[in-house]
Each structure stands twice: as structure tokens, then as C-alpha cells.
Image (cartoon, rainbow, N blue to C red):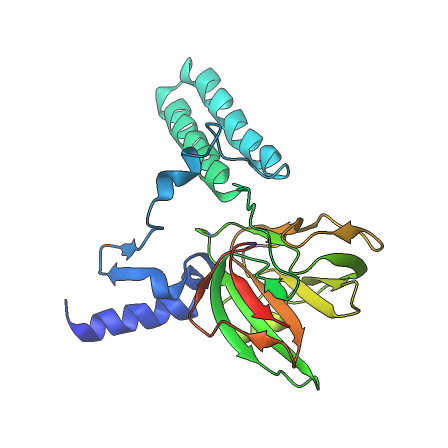
Length: 261
């Protein structure tokens, strides 16, 4: 396969809906027959969790149930028509298995120091820059379908604002995604310092779950919400915060130190 063909395909994947699901940096190889993606080093680890299982986000059970319902329907159809029942069973099992993986919600027990700002999401850092608002640095993180999609509090404090905003549904990997449907969560620490995180949908993901409400106290690393499928999370920090990540870095929610005061 020519290098020109490879470059063309990689450009199309990074610019299109494939980038909504798969991080472009994880593309291993492409060909006329398909796409090979670099999976997490041990994708089976979600089944190898202390205690024997990986926790699943509550909102995922409804989605998983839909897949299981398809399996049951397929078993019923199987008595009358094999060619209708069997495909439905297979699709239902695959959908349930994928949903079980996607909605995984691992425990993140790390304790952060007071001066540390925890990363609120798993994914790849897209940009670190000022976007026009004086005194504010914005860190944007892209979440592919292989990332955990639960968001966590970057600091301990009180939820001072939650604001849902309707918007577009551009591909989450693109800069235009900042105009997408989103939900802002503002947290103010005891020292008065404020950090905001923004849950942003993509072209496919159009569901945002916010677990917190104004006035609620949260701990650093505590779960605050979830976005369905490929999406983006933006973190708004005061410019005096020392940023410890750069574009291209792989980060993990409640594990990576995003910045320090």
C-alpha cells in the first residue's frame, strides 16, 4: 500500500467521525480492508479488578439492559426463524459487552495534596492555552470510546454553579466542539480558588449526566458526571496555576496531576 494512500486515510479518519470514537494518535495502521487501532495495554483489566469485578456507572445499566433485551428477543425469534433470531442474539451480546466496557467506572483511590489539581477525565490533552478570557488557561481533553467517560472533581470544595447550555454537535476532536452542547460545573475551594470543568458532547455522544448540584461539597477526585461516547472535557484554571501537562499527553481522571497552585 502506498504511503500516499496511508496518509490520505489517516487524514480522513482524524477529520471525520472516526476521530469521534478513536483518538487519532491511537491509529496503528490503515489499509483498504480496515483500520487497526492501538488498544489500551491491557484492555482485559476491566475484568481483573480487586474484588472480582469492575464497577459500572449506574446510568449504564439501562443501556446494557437494552442489549440483553435484544438477546432475549433473538432467543424467542430463534424458534421460528434462525436467520432472524441468531443475528439479533449476536448483536445483542456484542452491544451489551461493549456497553459493559464503555460504562466501566473504576475506583480511583489516589489522595491529592492541597496544592495539586487533579485531572477530571481520562483521555488525550488537545490544547493548553488562553482562549480569549483574561487570566484563564483552558485545558481541553479528548475522550475516545476506549477511555473511561466518568468525570471527577479536580479540587475539593463546594459546587458553586452548574450550567447546561444547548449547542452544536461537531466532532469532539475538532476546535469547533467548544460550541457544542455542554454542561459547566464550577467548584470553589475553601481558599477561594475556583476551577471549572465543562462536559462537552460530540457528533455521536449527545448525553450528559451531571451527578452534582449547587451547594454540594465534593472531594478531590470524586465523581461529578459522565458523558456518553466520544466527547471532550475542558478545564478552566487561573493563569497563576502551574500547568503540568502538554498537548498530546495521555491523562487519567483522579490519577494524573493536571496542575499545581
